[in-house]
Image (cartoon, rainbow, N blue to C red; front, side, top):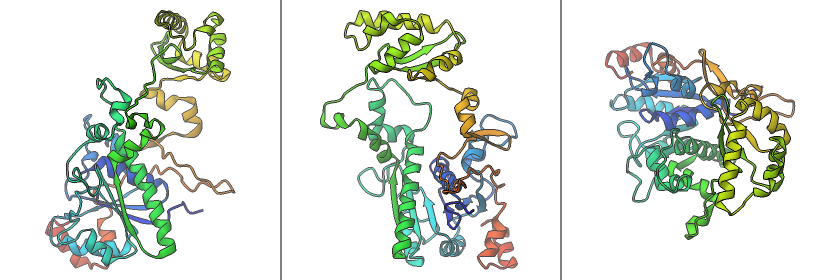
Length: 384
């Protein structure tokens, strides 16, 4: 059975902004789309570089670019315009991460592309969107999070620096939703469209579950004995979120401390401190995995704090194939799972090693109608 988007071809022009485009197109690959990744001749995507050293492929490159084809093309060269125009006539979706209105090749921007191929879906994934006073400002995940309001919501003290990107993958997922909507609209109307996704706005959307602060009445989640992390005997941590009377009661029963049941939501700071210290002492009696195996099945809302290799060996992750191997390197699988009524997967995670830089260039150029002589000229002139 074909994958969900096996009939869709995507031209990835995100280039130097490797992370946003990489997250976005990796999701499209797992949905079945054929993704053509355009890279600079001789350099390629910066994510190819393994900053940990050695000759092995970058784990990030393996994770975000698995299953894509690679076309080298110097899109600054005037000779690249005709190649890109021919590509635009054949693909369904274009991904770009440029400033609003920027050209993707000399003389070729969105306005020209939409007239060249009215069925084309053009997706712009940027920090702040296509208009507004911030539209052309540069930024990174941290600045998008800060501007969005999410960073302050996560840590009102502003003392915390996220160690993982948040707005970038969230913006990529939002962009995929927009692309799918545009594809469905095209099916009905025959016309493509422009998907305008701002990573900062995707992060702001997460505040929908706690919008009180937008009205000036911020509500914080207090750190209490029933809702925090605890270190265990083996140095690993568990997360306790037993904030309801039922789950708290089950927790107290499971750790053989029923006398703590009445302390839930106590407004007395001394009671909270004493309860926390008691739990800290109790949880040091066993390794984290034992506590999870003991308390989890009871319905206590207790789980492991997985980090590094524990993410790979987690039993739930292994059962669901959350982590897959690409060229022997563990990477996250695609999170979207769609099956037919017969049980066939429409979104199998692709584990094909990313194409070598420019590996598909000649084949793709030939499919556009360029002759062997024309392709050789583009090579000789450094355009591909």
